[in-house]
Length: 148
Image 1 (tube, helix red, strand yellow):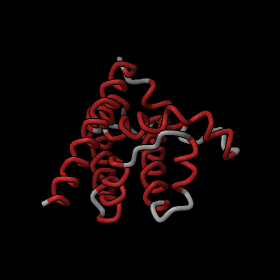
Image 2 (cartoon, rainbow, N blue to C red):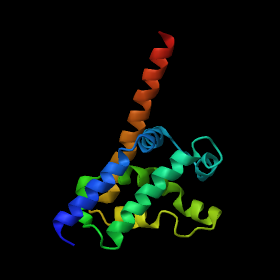
Image 3 (tube, helix red, strand yellow):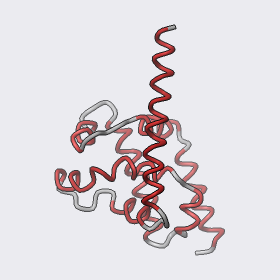
Image 4 (tube, one colour):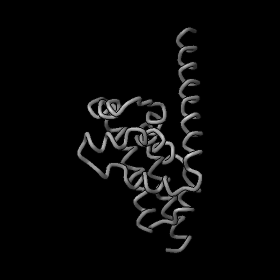
């Protein structure tokens, strides 16, 4: 595939991320803070189930394009970072979720793409720290607005 075709597919993936419900789902996912595999399973029976499934399945699908050669991995990773955030949230629970759900390939494409990024372990630590700070800042804004 040419670099132009790779770029075109990445732009199409970006357009899908801009769809209004997908934006809502992505915003929710960033603020969602699972602490256990149970939190990931519990969300499936909540009103946020569609958001959760939309985000994780989108990024697993997008990464399947990388893993199957439909888009260049370097270009994909240079143009995106959200898949790393999704993996950073889900990675601590993947093995348990795969066992619990009987789905040994759950998020396997996402995992493979992310694990192939050079220096990923340090980046994951950084992403997890940033996520915590974002959530803390958001919670402070909410508390401040409620007290006003």
